[in-house]
Length: 462
Image 1 (cartoon, rainbow, N blue to C red):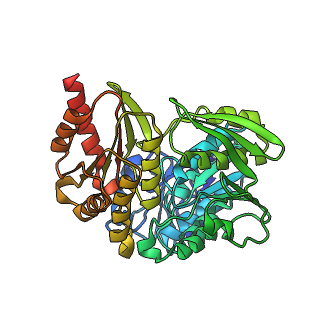
Image 2 (spheres, one colour):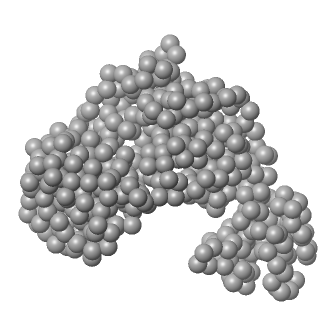
Image 3 (cartoon, rainbow, N blue to C red):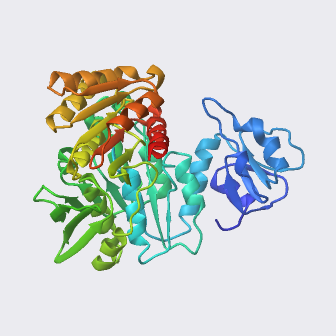
């Protein structure tokens, strides 16, 4: 960020400034990340209160503190506000308004982080681009991203997540995007929102902060998005199946290295080789490609940029070891992404297809039916062996329902484990060169423990 005086920060947050008007060179909410010259903002959460760490922040060199009451910290500069969480958003919005640059906001039920990364990659072909790091996509993470803006950046891509109605609205008003992307409307967070229609309503809150007449990219193959009524914004539908799609993929081919397809947009046809698996990633690439072209990136340069995409974390990364293809997809899970991951497993050329699945969280009343249907889907797609996993019995109900759904639909080779080492040992004895195996569950299941245990045993047996 560029330097700011405390007086300017106080005005932006409707706060009261006390003490010397010092210059701020950085902003943080975490005392573990304090640098000399920083403003420390004391946030309150369900399990913490940043006001308890003000002294630590000052000891580490913070130049000033923003808090909700005068904490009696002597001569240090203090900015007092009514609500530090609201002030965080207000300050981020103030900083955002200083820069007249393209800013893409990405939301949706599945694929937000991948689409954000691909979009930033495409925009970087023409502009120095700031992007959300990891999935810092809430009312703390979005401001943290915007605090990183300075005059060197010519574009930005911001990911926005939510659990309840109203959250995307606040984030969008803060970031003031000049282009919006909604990847799809699934059932993640349905426990809080009750229906896919309410999830659509929550995602469309993106329009509340979208600049006037700014374009909106929507997945035209999603029946709810395709039927959404959008006013005052040009809509570009992207996808594969719907004839309304202005940005579409054709000539799709799964290769040993990933996906090959042609993007049709306007009168251009651009060949793309995407180094990752899964038909759903084509949708992410289409949105990223369209955003780049709308902001002036040449189609051929956008296609070339997508060829350099590298999956982050454990999001459907494919690793080859000993002739076996391991699909690491341990970051998150919901019914839509589960089916997509199973489809990906089936698309990979292999002798046998093995799925290691665990529970999907935050599904509320639809959870039993959703888990049973995932199990049924493994049988319908011809998975050869199904493993279900619940670490030490935690979140075991979902895994049991997946197993039951598979059994009810004729999948006979099913194995259940609640111990990572035991699962790894059985898999190690089962796998042969030419097999493909998928690991997929919600983050809380800690499926990566089973995956890492397998890798360790695999290496020992090589």
